Image (cartoon, rainbow, N blue to C red; front, side):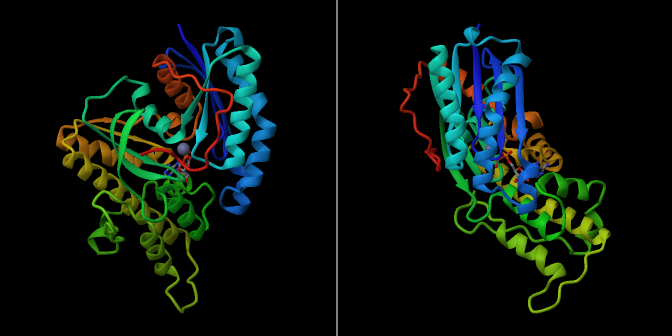
Length: 343
Ligand code: KG4
Ligand code: ZN
């Protein structure tokens, strides 16, 4: 039996988890800072790192306690080292180094995007290859040709905003709460876009600006604004029903863009499986649209349960376990990198 402690602090979630044999999540504690950043409608790096500093030790203790695990029973400590906010990454990495050194445990550095990809194979094991994977979060939106979480190449990525960032910015425009993804989804819930689409009121899907598997969200974001604030005019006051309608139409367009581009890449690659992860993969409509497209094309779909899509440390421990089994050990000179080294 192998128990790995995972630590994640790359953005605004302080998280720790204990995972048995790479698959069984014994505990997964996520302390979100959303309320601290909400007044600024985005993550403030300095507030994030200070909050990680206050929370990291209790979160690790809680993860061990909830798993009923002693440090002496662990086989390794895995920690996110990249990409992310440098101050935030350093808090988790320093805590992981101190913990590993004190308890004489191997230390393993994990790429955050690779961990999001790994989450899709954690619950049900390896997927049928070839596979195409979508990671859609607040900081990244990209498609990968996926063989494993340590063997993948980028097929396309966003040329402007990340998908989650677009949800967050559109929510701010519409006066909806931060983070925007869940509040847009809630505002749009139960709103039938079909009649609006028949009347031609839908937002046009963004055209790929560079490659066929690239994404673009900034034009869509501007199109939402122009519906109630045309250039050079005074903004119209948004009534509740109009807010719901715009939220639903934006969600529809963003989700179709993500789902269609993912399926186009899967068909181009002759994929047998499609994987998805990252916070935006919590979105119910996106999950439904991916499922419908994959069923139509006879592709297997792997989208982890929402708790494993949004930032968490179970995915870090899971990938750490796979790297540990493959013989990976990092030294105490392990560095944090703000940008990813993902190909
Ligand atoms: O992966 P994640 O937790 O953190 C990053 O690595 O960025 O993703 C956070 C992003 C936020 O932009 C949030 O608005 C978005 O994921 N998100 C959603 C939903 N839940 C979270 N977007 C759309 N629909 C959701 N239900
Ligand atoms: Zn993430």
